[in-house]
Length: 152
Image (cartoon, rainbow, N blue to C red):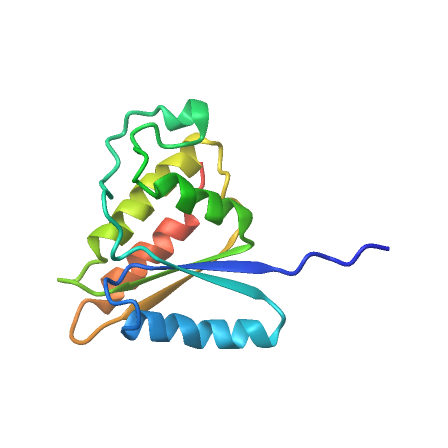
């Protein structure tokens, strides 16, 4: 009899601050998941270089990868991590009632690859983590929640 593979969750931190409020909130979630034997991986995307938005070219429908991504653009690596994981956490600071630019790029580009790929992220468990000082948390939380529930 084989031992079942442990569940894995990947969290994307959209904050530029590697140890800021968003990272601390994600770590709180991770501490509870680890108690249940769930493997956790944190990917800090807030300080990524060469991240741009989706242009809607549709080439990912054929390759299941972003054709626009150059060698220094990590979007295909990030999407592969989503595909490998059982659960996905999207964490971002609230910036002018919205997510960070890097988180928006992740949502748009991976979302488009998911949809054109026939729902490759279907049946994944998703959660949103919101760090906020003033207003805007509801819209930021809603955007990530909607991004995690999109299916073709």
